[in-house]
Length: 346
Image (cartoon, rainbow, N blue to C red; front, side, top):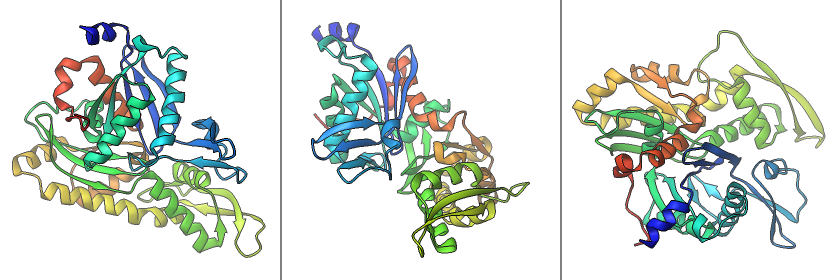
């Protein structure tokens, strides 16, 4: 009775703890927060001085006594204390300081497919400690499939490829469950590192993560473009130590990132090979669905089709597919609660 009474007053939310971004969806309101998963901590006072976008601006620019931390790695909490602090700040922002007993939210949050029981419990514990009343878990590709409006409840095979900042997950889903899957600890941030390494080796220039991401977004591609593109970038010359401006083109960026993209493509092929024939028939007919921010690389669908010869579809607003799926679970909880996974706290 007491739990039901609390439920009347609490705000149910979806929480996407991504490697790159933390997103919050409020029931009946939609997406209400989207911030980078990063925090700046003053080591002298052990206090958080910036969260999200404000902390991202400090990355690579802060003095030694300010530590800029990314506490979520491959969708898993790597720094419990810092993640708890971030969530407390964001929850206070969302609920505008009104986090009393009646306002403690029920939270639906996603976890990777290959998460361990310890890692699963860590996610639940950090969300509870940050102020949640109850936590429900859903596997990330399942949430993304719901967000992509795939018929996961039916006896139809759906293949979704969710490419996040630090994790790529390929899953065949049928009857509300994952039939076969493969997880890779590579994602959008891996592509950024590929670009940084290439620029260093090719031009002897060191660039930062944010510059690499900008290059990836603007001229990165998985296959040749109709028109060649180039971009001016600035970094530190490793010989002189002085600033230097260079020009990179799409062909150079492609040579840096395609080896990593091909690993994902080969993993898609491996997953299909392990899938029951009847579901493979469904996938061949319906195609592969891409979600996650990493799937926005230009011509990535073409690279997949050349290897696998199956239609490839990019879901609407792919970076938001997971949080959109969590939101749909909140909005239709009774019909979708079958996709939730057991808690590790019991």
